[in-house]
Every structure is written in structure tokens, then in C-alpha cells.
Image (cartoon, rainbow, N blue to C red; front, side, top):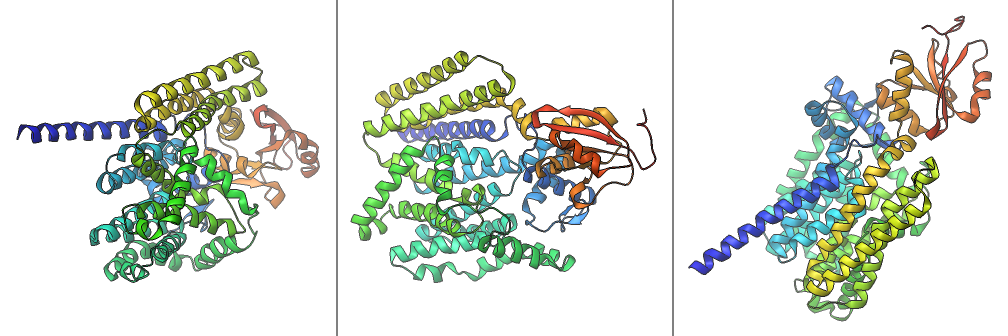
Length: 547
């Protein structure tokens, strides 16, 4: 009796420790420093502004941008962001919170599934998933991609839990998660799920799994969650089907309409980079699974190792599907990364001894990655600001490389692969911390419109309209969010009739003068990190800038 009690107490302690570790690592990887640099690219500020306009209008149906219906994406991210705006107020970091929460849910889903169905290395699987570069990066960005990755991961794990346990509860989770995925990114969620399940059932020789998966209560649950918004937005915006389904799903896949054409092999390096620092072991785990599958097909697919085959199909099938698409973006294959990290957890779980050559390869690559992140940040600072010396950069890189390699060698030799997660995570944490502290100000200045918006505000107190001429979409949408006003674009004929501020590249000031003949132009300042000038433009007939 006492032995059972001690075992139960030890199990509870391990459980509490697991949850503390998950909370700590997820808090650092996804939440720490979200406000260190402003929204970057065109998508982050655009999505954040759409959510703000819905929040201000108290409209939960129609996304708008500059007051006009913006129907390119579904609603789920905007709903999440509106909730955080309501709690914390409108800010760039609040716009990133939904992704951080979704990434955390993804990690917890991996942990709970492994804990229930593949115990022993459930914490490894969750932490490996949390620390993959692709998960960390998209988990800190204001975008829809991590919401799809999370809902798709929950759906796939729930489906496999159902087919292994025959509990309809898990099948219900599968349908509910697919409905959320449909609200997050559209019909791609159920399509990819059907593709993976079909290929797995075919490989297993049990196509009847497809018929068993079609469950009427589950379909009703899916429709109850997913369809109301689609019906409501279509009723309020009759062009929704044409814009969202035809243009931004079918045309995006089959044509180069949106100018995202990439070679067929584009996703291979994307997957490799997204799986850093675990890529060496992931490749080995894939190769081992395929080898065993090829040689022991019948017995493997009837054992618990069938999960490994399921993970390989989950990883490979969507990558091949999107490789055929005429429009390719890195975020499209994010839902496949958890399959790779879970496959690695399975690989480590079955290893009873160390593979020294494999460990050396992992050590070398991981130490290089750990060293290169802060080193590249320092290199960028040197190139832009002529700050620390190259000798300091070299010494810093060598120090981090040696430290990471020494830690990994020592622990792998003494403890084996079961401590791989910790000896890899520690250098990753250090590298991310250094990159955020050193690189955030540079990223903010070079890639975000936040500091530019602050400079313009100091010049004119936020009272004037702002326009852009020859400036990038990133600048336009960034100013839109940080100024909370529509940004006119000269090239589109949107020249404000009254006085305003215009932002132009430094090399295009002569074109600006030709564009505004008859109106007074006063130079206000230069934003050197992005090579932009900004000018005050008078209303027709106004001769001087008011003070």
C-alpha cells in the first residue's frame, strides 16, 4: 500500500513539474517580448487594423479595412483579437496575443495526446514542438497561420485517438477542431484532413475507416460551429463567395494571380528551417520510419507504430499538395511541423542506446544554430550602425558555439537521448533572448512602421492625413495601423485635396515635385533606417506650413 502511495505521489510531482516546465517554456517562446518591435510586413498591421475596425464598430460579422469590406480571410483571428483588444486595449502586442495563445494550445494538445496514448516521452514531444523555429516564429506573429496549425493538430491527434480507442468523444473533438480550422483559414482545413486520413487508411488497407469517420453527429457539430458565420457574412456581403472562395482559394492555388510563384522544391528548405534545431533527428526519424514501413509494412501498420506512419503522411502529404500550388508562402505548411516534432518524440522514445554519429551531427548543427542567431544579430548591427567590432562578433559566436557543443556532448554521453530536450532547449532559450534584446531595436527600425509613425506624430501631433508615394505596402499598412487612419496612395490617384503629410523614398523627391505642381512642399524629416523622407504638402493656394 505504501509503495502504491509513493508511486502516486511521485507521479503527481512529475505532473506538476511537467506543467510548470510547459508554462515556463511556452511563456518565454510565445509571450516574452511581444512588444519589443512593431508589427512587420504587410499582413501583421493589416490584420491588426481589420480587427480594430471590427472592435470599434462592434461588428462580429464583416471584416473591414479603411471602412470597406475586406473578405480575403475568415473570421477566427479577428474574433480572438477583438477579445484581447477589449481586455488590454488596442496595441501591436495585443494583436499578437492570439497567436501566442494558439501556439500554447498546440503544445498542450501534443502533451495531452502523448501523455494519454504514448506516455514516457510526452514532455519531450511537447517541448520539442514548442521550440521548433517555425512554431516559435509564427506563434509570435499577428497572423492566421498558427490558428490553422493548432486546430489542424488537435483534429489530427483527436482522429488518431478515436481510431485507436474507438471513443466517439475524440471523434467529436476532431469535427469541432476542423470547424475552428475552417473559421481560421477556410476549407483547406477539412480538405487536408480528408487527404491525410484517406492516405493513411489506404496505406493500412482499411478504407472502411473513411466510412466510419463520417459520423452524423460530428457533421452536425461541424456545421453548427463553422457555418453560421459563413452564412451571415454571405448574406451581408453577396460578393463574399466570389472574393474568398473563388479568388483567394481556388485562384490562389491554380494561378499566379497574387505573385507568390516559387519553384516546386520551395517548401523543402522552409520545412528544414522550420524544424531547427531538431532537423537532424527529424530526418533520421523519418528515414527510420520509412525503412521499417517498407520492410515490415503489414506488422507495423497493425501495431502502435502505425502512429509513426500516420505522422509521416501528415508531414509529407500537405507539403506535396502545396508544392503543386502556383502560389506558395511559408505559412502554408506550418500545420505539418507538429507531425515532424511528434515523430521525433516517438523516435527518442524507442531509442535504447545512443547513436554517436547522429548525436555528433545534432551537436554540430545545433551549436552552430545557437551561435548563429546572436551572431547574425550582431553582424546586422555592425553592418547598419557600425557598432561592435568584428572581433567581438567572432568571439561571441565562438563562445556560444563551444558552450552549446560542450553542454550537449557532456549530457548526451552521461545521460543519453532522454535528456536531449533540455540540453537543446537551454542554448535555444539563450539564443532567442540575445536575439530579442540585441535585434529588436534594429528590427523595429528596419522592418516596422512604428518608429516612422512616431516621428511623424512628433512633427504634426497626429492631426493631418498621411499619404505615401512609391513607398512599399509594408509602410502603407504599417502607418495605417499606427496612425489609425486610411493612408492615401498617390499612384492610385488618391492625392488628398487638403494639406497632408506624404512619405516617399529618398530617391523620389523630384517625382514628388512634378506630381504636386502648384502646391507648396516642405521637408519635415528623414527616416534613415528605411531610407524614407516625409514632407508637408499644402492645400492648393496655401503658401506656408502653419505652426
